[in-house]
Length: 128
Image (cartoon, rainbow, N blue to C red; front, side, top):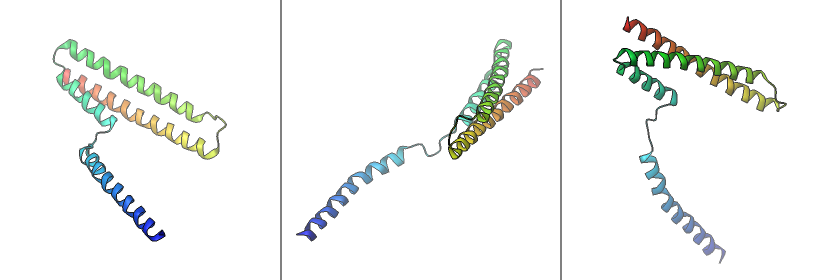
């Protein structure tokens, strides 16, 4: 009796697995294999903005956007670094993980701000 129950349980598990496997494969096939990071997507959009600016008004708007975005990102990076320095009375490992995460976010924002400023300088050189 026990042997037949265990065989039935194994068969039930296999049937369920055979139903789930195609679903997992379908999701795997249709999921984006080559996804683009948010930072890369933003870089590509900015490149398109810079390249599409033709009139003096458009060029001024793009330059103002790049400048304002760089300033905002540097400001946010400073805020994140300040938050990383603050202690909230957490456990050591949790506090360290939080600090590292905030530092990584600040570094990413600094890189993005550097990229904005470089694009702004290149944009100004091309226009003069």
